[in-house]
Structures are given as C-alpha cells and as structure tokens.
Image (cartoon, rainbow, N blue to C red; front, side, top):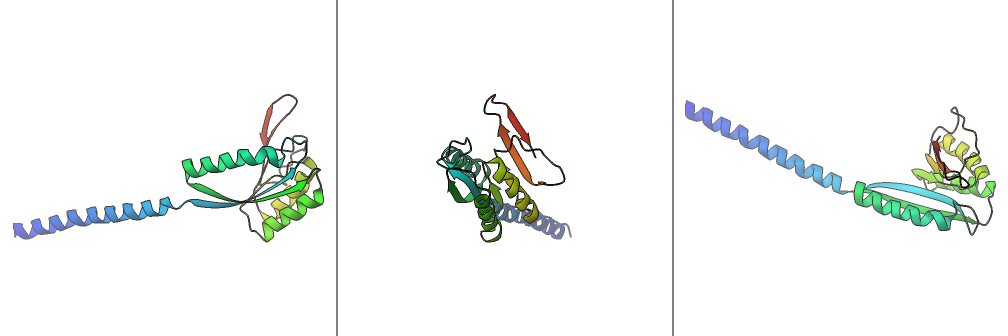
Length: 164
C-alpha cells in the first residue's frame, strides 16, 4: 500500500511542474507580441508654430522607438500636415477621416488653438483620445473635452502646463 501512495505523490509533483512550465511558455509568447496603437498626427507644416510637423515629428519618432524598446508598444502612425497656417476646416476634416475611416486609437495634434477647439469637440463625440501641445489660452471645461490631454508650455516663460 505505501508503494501505491508513493506513485501517486510522484505523479502529483510532476503534473504541477508541467502545468506551470507550459503556462509560463504561453505567457512569454503572448507578451512578445507588441501592443499596437494606431495614431493619427495632424499638424501644420512650414509654419512658425512651435508645434509644427518639423519640430514635433522627430520627437514623436524618438518616443515611438522608446515605447517599443522599453514597453513593447508599437505605434502605426498616419502623418497628416497642412501648409503654413491654421485652418479649422483642414483640422476638422482630417480628424474626421482619422476617426471614421482610419479608425485611429489616438489623435495627436493639432498645434493651433482654434483648430484644437473644434477637433476636441469631434474627438469627444467619437470617444477618440486626443493629445496636444497647443491650447494654453483655451479655457478648460470639465463637461466637454473629456478625453483631451493638453501638454503645453508658455513659450515666453517656458512654464509647463498640463491638464485636460
């Protein structure tokens, strides 16, 4: 009788080890695939704005590389720029295409305050998170723009403003 008990105990010891090893292998496989985020970037180009495509794109590309290396998050980016000056209809039109056609997970930009106001209303309606560096002069209303993250600094004083 003691021999039979010993066999059962050996089997029980082997099974948990096999289960844990198999489970660990499956978890490692799942974690190795990067999390993919579709981002739409809407900015002016060839303007004098601080948040112009020529200034922001290199920083975003460094951020994307860091996100992939350190956090296993991969960005698929749709870059949209419009020339020289802020135009609300351009920003609104491109944001609509990004939200409805391209089905992005986040919109970065626009870099103009007037454009930002109208796009933030659209992104609030479609529940698409928005991140922007502009908007330091825009009054914040908690009941609207609920998924807009503003990261701005005052160019003249270099103070940093973060809020929604």
